[in-house]
Length: 298
Image 1 (cartoon, one colour):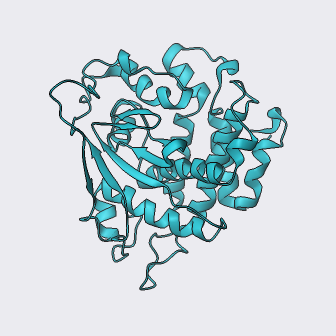
Image 2: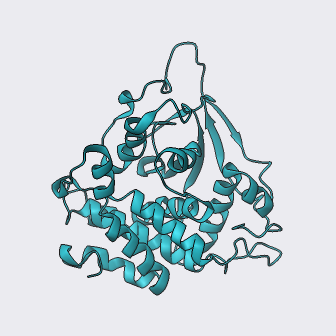
């Protein structure tokens, strides 16, 4: 368990939105589909057309996407038992954390995608991994992403790994509202690009939050989350490894092209998660000042 069972997460404002489509089963997508699922949002490439059986985000007769609130996600026990409630609980805990660390903090939106839905950044679907959309300041997550990571991509993707991924996307929101994205705009790809440095800082933010995630409490004084265990942290580091540019490229094509990097290597992503966990938020700014050959902590 990651959440305290009695913690109150009923204050969440997470929404469920989509057409109710289901991602293809374990036997239906194959490795190419998994690479598209994970590499698409990470590498800035739309690979969803390569996946057979994908969701039609705007097909005729599908009807308008439905939206509802997660009012049945009330306690930490719900978050421990259901992935969508875990996302809702993460929203509550992350907002509590960042309200204490950012002056004038503005909460992002949080949408659990059910099949597909439109966003200001394009279509979020069950063929796309979690992402943050700056124009509408919202995090979009399809919970089936975690299942696919577990079943077909060799990642453990347990509870804390899922919270790491949500915390990473929240990190992008922090970068947006604090002006980091404006200060370090997109300047292309490559191992020293702003894109890589932005992603590594988001990993650092996620690590810093996870180290202190048991400190924030609900109105009754119950901590939302329990302290992480060593096994859970290994699981989160495993997730950071899986989403490294070099690992994804090796899995998809058998070769690595550093000039196309957008998120950093597995070693770099693991290092900055661990650095934030060990040393806190103050070290995270260094992702933009260190020489590229030092971004892996060596």
